[in-house]
Length: 522
Ligand SMILES: Nc1nc2c(c(=O)[nH]1)N[C@H]1C(S)=C(S)[C@@H](COP(=O)(O)O)O[C@H]1N2
Ligand SMILES: [Mo]
Image (cartoon, rainbow, N blue to C red; front, top):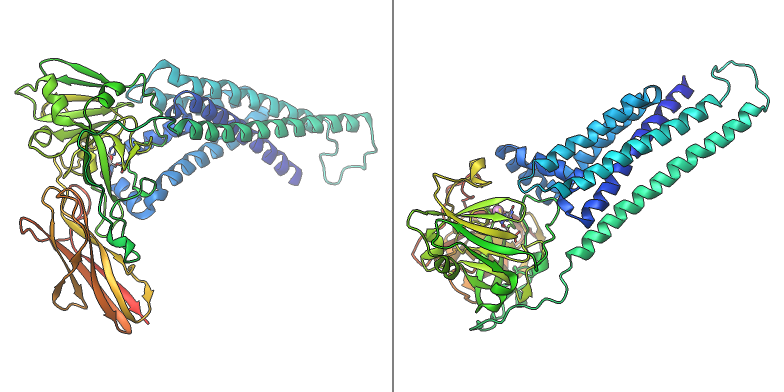
């Protein structure tokens, strides 16, 4: 019985290894071509796209930044479980096993085909898996079956068998099993590591300089973070800037073949190359980006100096028709975002950004170009890897998030955050500061107030001002006495609007409410 189990396990392992060989070599192939066409990632993306909004909200809230690794991990685990069963089936019915494994590969193949901008070459990684997976299964199953045939003594009480020809044959067949498993394990490891290396090297952007800016802004003033530990930097360093998108593989876009097209309700369709945009007069704007999924007190907000081309200029060159009320933007993979046309024309600093904080846009933040619209949550105004702006109507076309019931138009709600002390932290008694950031894009921060232990609202000192679209740092000196304390913060914008106390979840149009934290002193 024990031997039977061990054999079953060996065949399950053969199935798993066959699956892993297929996936890892396909992943490497995809890394060389289009990373998102990796079968494992394509399934993950399909799952993301099919997940109902409430479940996604729950996942983002409960899993935070781990949501994507957990998703990919689940896809891999499910694949491995299926592959193990297939390995066991293949022991006696090799042909059926091969068919089942091919089926397991065709599933992600379907996910690849269903991607919006599918092109035939995206199927190459799937085909690689389709050949290698079953081939590995055949090799390993045959080697195992051969070794089993040569292994004597099926019964525990069987007669003692002396070394015979059969046994020495058993040794060489067992060696074949080891060689087969060893070689394929090495191949998978090498392919997986190679895929990672290829993606990393392709992600680096070599030798590109930021375009020249016509009228550069004065340097950003020194922020409060220099004086008070724990307050967010006035400018969010690019490496710390939050990242939110639907993609499991960062698109690798070649700037020489990339173009930005303006079409739809325009007088003339226009297409710009990367160099066209770089050679135009570029501008700089300080803009704080915020994600609609940011909870009160959350981290999905970042402040940067963006370099790029005014959106209005590009649209006016194309000639804006009189029917459009929406800009439907499309990214390199066919993902869409809808933005009110009004936001491009009402005088705010909406732009096609090529640079962020003095550097060429990174691939994670949308290289070669992205939309940035101050005052709107990212999901309705910050399309990364953008390739097309279509002037259309809300009643004629919908976009990815609005199809998932998020609000159509979504101005960023004014909000404030306590960065220091941290919620639920322990701090020593004595002189300290309470500090953080507050934002009210398009209106500007006028006042930040802090409430300690339910007392009166006390005005905080504000940090430097970089315009209405940029956050303000704030702090309040505090002599902390031993015990438990409750700290709250609220912001008022320059129009006199006070941050709302009404608690709202991020879905469907952004969170609201006041951050109220507890800290222990002494
Ligand atoms: N192509 C594309 N652009 C996108 C998204 C996306 O999923 N795909 N997510 C949007 C959302 S929800 C936000 S909040 C911002 C985040 O930009 P960042 O990742 O540079 O911070 O990008 C927006 N642009
Ligand atoms: Mo977002």
